[in-house]
Image (cartoon, rainbow, N blue to C red; front, side, top):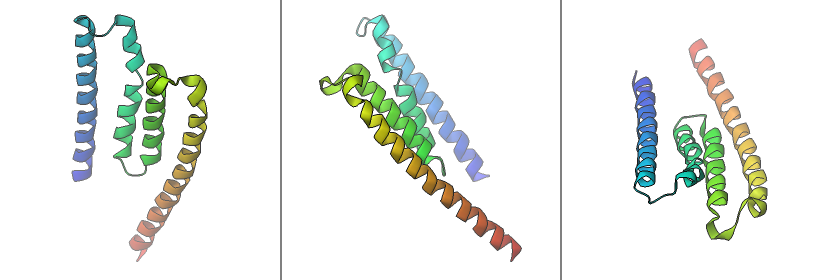
Length: 124
């Protein structure tokens, strides 16, 4: 019962945080701090938030890492942090994808071991 309530609690934090971020961005846009069409440069933050949410869930940490990393990469590339854009940073996606696949394999093995352990404990 506690696991279910924890999951709903995490979901509310994610939805609430996302609404708060969107509200702040719209407010800054309306008062002229951010230009209207530059708001799309902040769209990858949605992936970052989803990634953080997934990383809090067991057996979904690899997926969360991938979403988080992809969001950070897109944000850095779109905003040209340190003067670098997509042209220079695209190999980072290959590195992140490799990490994701290896991590996903480790999680899949752990999930399989846990299922076997639970099955073994039930049969005893």
